[in-house]
Image (cartoon, one colour):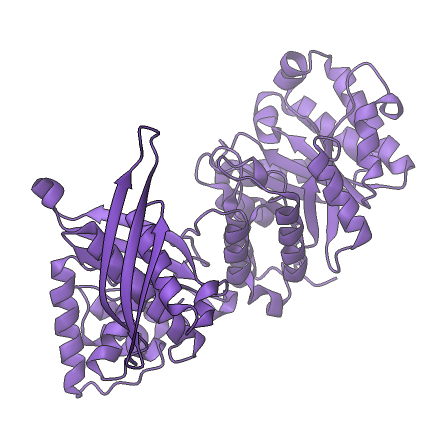
Length: 532
């Protein structure tokens, strides 16, 4: 075994799925499981077999096509009070799932035993012991999750310890201490984990499971590991009920890169950012740009002084190499930018500029002028790349919009409306006129543009709108206010964002839509580098 080895236990598919606004189909769960398997996570908690048909099917599918690197784990509670484990029908689907490992949770807090389960403290110990012994008799290996462990320990430490002893004596191979309510702080976690090890010894290893209700889930996990825990449970991107679980992306990076523990193989650690973004795509939640380590802004530099320093030595403003976890440095362009920002940003797009080139100053002045008018290139790097190429005379004219019209019809009292857009596009000296309908003016305009161009540029069929944001820039002007539109597009592999600004929201949207299609075509033709 590798020195300082830690065991990562992912519960995105069970605890993470309890996140408000997150819903996973069977196919979603399978895709995430296989991505985590590629990452090399030792344990993947798949769900509670029998709780719903989807979880049953999930385990059946993985029996037919097993994971290559990870152990898939079934999750359940101890048997019900007043019966034996062998006679509890709730436990049969757990065995039927066919997993080698089962994670069983039981009560640690006497309050939950007497008020929640409505049973005696002795019966709770018997439930823990009997259920584990039953699973062991059926050839299963057991991880015991001590629910509400830290709250229970603080209220009645003697009884809480007895629950762990019952689990260990019955054959549990891991004892996981859970901060289920997320209210314990890092110094308490470390102290209590040390006390448990002092009381129980190290014959049965400890795990840690933390929630983020006090915004300390990752810090709590690190504190537990420093005190002797060797398993860390959490979720990708910190998804989970209420405020979420410990974010494994941050926990793994801190543990492996800062504290010297071995969580993942080095070549797999390089895919951590990719995994984070993949999971956010599958669960259909926007990635957190400001997430530590894996966010797009985690290594973004905006101030001109910062950019100059980072160009000389990244250590000046970066705590690790972004490449170590598969992220990348980004130079942010805004009205606060200096010439160093422009040069660095151009380089990130594969454009080498000489700072003495007059075009550099032209780009910088145009940037500041447009940002003063309401454009925001910090959030629309594709539009800034096009601006640079325009100034340098390197922007190919793939198509030219000669004009457009949009007509909106209000429905006959049914609350529905539709729009019709017509566009004239010139490609290679030839004009094309097309019309299309949509459920709104922007939808109709987008559809008409695609219809006019798709026969000439078939790859447009793979472009999809991911996000559409509208912001009023001078609200005191009322309906005459200037509007900024940010439009994010994808081809299924890359994302890019374009911007439009106008007092006419349709015109602002038109600018962003047109540049979004143009930039997508340039990406496809490898004319420009991939945008972050």
